[in-house]
Image 1: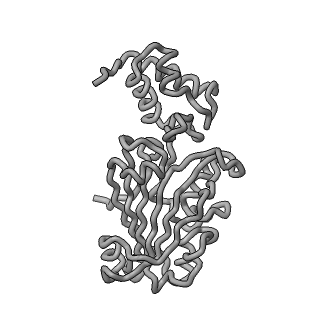
Image 2: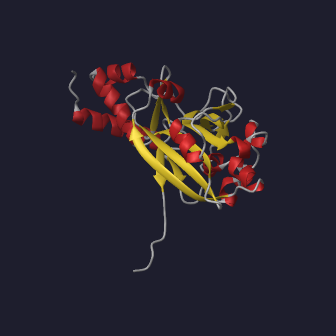
Image 3: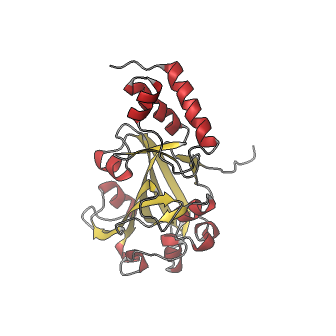
Length: 267
């Protein structure tokens, strides 16, 4: 197994970091390849890979399988505000189609429509999703699977990259035959449409796990299989104490920051 060269990794990563911060490598720009960095610095292949891992940990670079490493368009991490992102004004700000698009807009990024349309179908959900929705294990639910892209130029199909996979499940007696089965759910996204139908979400429950992606997830996200992701499972509960949505988000850990805030009772 190749030995890591710590001193060289930190030195070369610091040099690339400075070039990113001073604009030599602009947001979205392609960085040297592992082999190019290896040749230029006279270092081992594994050492060159470790340099890019260091930049990825800082949220300054992202590796796209088969295409190389690029400077992240936002120079840092996307902050997912778990406390405020689902407030009606926040998720529809500027005509956004939901909380994710609104978050990107605040960063000066474009929510890019995926090259292929979202997969929207009526199908049997995983057992744990069916249980949460109060469905029989053989019942169908409405499933919306989306590959979420972010970039700076919404008109350039080659620019930008995948930042999240999101699969949402809704009970058919609520969502069947509604705009939730359409590609564009409208301003505010699915949560606004549910509210209009009398199923406003009043309570959110989320659980988060860090893990390695499956082969299919890594391919869809364009990342190596040894890069960790967050799996965030989101349960949305109505005023009637019914779970009306279960969503599973898979997000590369190196480009996302999860933020929560709450008040404590006085002692």
